[in-house]
Image 1 (cartoon, rainbow, N blue to C red):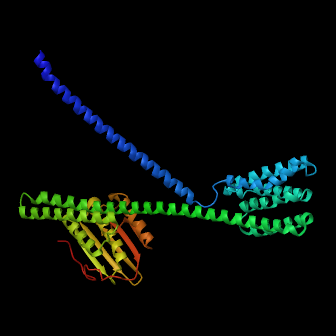
Image 2: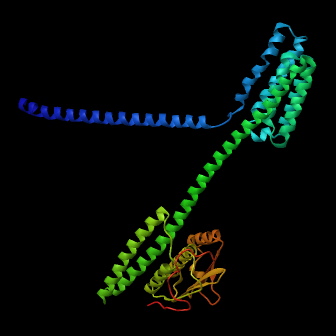
Length: 430
């Protein structure tokens, strides 16, 4: 029994030491993670404080409240008894401060600032200010610059300058009665307080609107990029998977009787897969530009592998790269739909260009309406062509089957002519 106990003791001690090391390692990892999270939180708070510091202009009405201290001289006169009828003066002071606070907080909300009630409150402030200035003069004339601050915070546009001149003139006249020529300082201070306050707040609002516009543009750019990527991925994968499925079916049919032909189809599947990887990488980075000649060749190959006779006609002047790329997307999507949905035996692709417009028509003799409603691929292509000034229409063909018609305006050619089937030539699928 003693030997057994002593033999088990080292194993238990080793397990304890292993668990202790594991616990220390976990604790160190948790401590490091907590430090990283705390550092990240501090950095985020610092960025938030920096962004708030970069904002121009006051955020709310509290920034205008300290200017009420300009009325402390009038308050001191009332308390010390230097002013006659202190109760009337004190009531006027209370009313003025209450109206000023109301206007200050309304000034930072556009709807409240432009409301008629705010203009009424501002007019009452002007009446109280004139009454106090006429009745008392002296320090009570300091309420005119404070009234100017409130006026500059509320008024905008054409109303601002006449109001500033009117208040300055009123302050100068009333002050002149009490102070003589020294009252010019009150007139100047009132005018400056109106104009400077209005300029600062207008600039603050402009900066805020620009920031909101920038954020909206960033969101719009992200949404457009997501839409572009989803459309490209839909078109790329739809076409590529259809080619792989068709060639896999051909391989299955050829394998029992012609092994070399089946191996050729397998090689084609491998090549299509590699090409799809390249195209998806290009679509992710946004650098993929389709080629009409390449898409026509691929469509001809896809339709031929599916047992559909393909006839391609191309005529007219060479196309600009952007036009060729858009029409290439239409050819890719339409050929994929023909193979997947139409059960057609014949398909015609015709590209006809004039000096003004280029027209692409793809017609099959399949099930027509029975092939289903237009999917997201055709809808996305219609939006793309519409953005480029063109149009895309799809529906049953007059003689049966299904037809897709795309038109684009001719733009200046900045690249070499597009290769493909020669003008007026026809090339049936092998």
